[in-house]
Length: 532
Image (cartoon, rainbow, N blue to C red; front, side, top):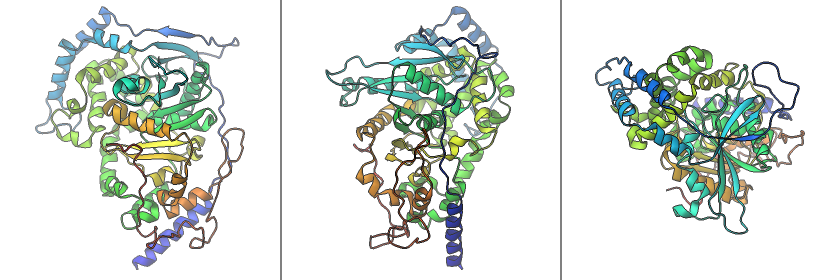
């Protein structure tokens, strides 16, 4: 009976993958206008203007007045962070914010790197541009665009930037020296929000692509997590000739749902069949844990994807409410177990100064509402409906999977979207806010990814079948693969295409003594040097 169910499931999956093969598609760059009113007929001002983060006594007085007028509700007994931000601990944070936190000092820290603004598609785009203090003769810096998400900001990268632009001063090799560009997503921080509906990841990707060209970079690398992952992925799709490499610390897939659900059903007993490694099994099972996490941690997402302005009105008028809303995410998204601690574990990983600086960037800019609208613009049509969600990425890609990330993406799933994974690293620790929490680990993984030269080497090609799994490799090879600029087809090898699933060259066939599809495992690699 179980054998019949298993064979029927596999056959159904194979038929589904065969009939759902993608045809050649092109993702065009397009254009947009997000400024107020109609697009002017005159050319847009393309000047790049210096920008300084500033504050005033009036701003601080208004903040303190609002903090003083906060009404607190007693928390439930022994509730810790399971009901949200613990209100007893919130009083401690508020007291520190009101009486100890030095915003002027933090403004000086923010201004340690040069900031700029430039107008693109009708709105002002803010970014910082950190250049290395010293570059050895004959060596060229590598431009790296680093993209934040929600509820983060460009400040997330302040601890990793020194490791990238001045590695030798931090005990690292100067083989790879970067200059780092960190923009604020439009509607976040000091970037102007769109005045029109429809501003999504595609629009943000196009704007950041134009930004890099305006800065004079014809080739560059992109790194991102959260929304930065989505935006960076689209950048790799619209400008593959310019994006030399894409490094992500979060891979969020919205298509191939049937394969992923089926692989979850089979992977517990036949991990090799679907390309799961031992670490994948530890992070994915029991499956009920995943559903529990989604249920407990996605309430905000439904609100922000439907009616962001309503809750945003309250958050934009209460600094303490804003802090509770944002910092609760820095607790549970760093480690779900922190929900069981009275202080949410916040000070285990971060300082209150760093956390409140991030909150202040939302408060002083008044962008909590516009930042939440980004969810609605990306998700209101549903998942998997946008063209960029349906086509692959061919740019060399590195993935760093942190164990406390909310949703784990095995390499076998990632390869359905990212066709040229040159680096996949199981990180030893860390959660959603990788650059903020574990800057050294993330910097190390970025450096080893760049060190692979943006080329897919033999070792990666050899473990393709094991990394993707028998079924995943088959669908990956059976999809028509097109270059995304000008509609040019990439030349790819598609072994095993067709019905001969157990014949020579088939992804279900293994040369090892024990069949790979039954449960054989092969190391995927953890980066070079190892991440410890």
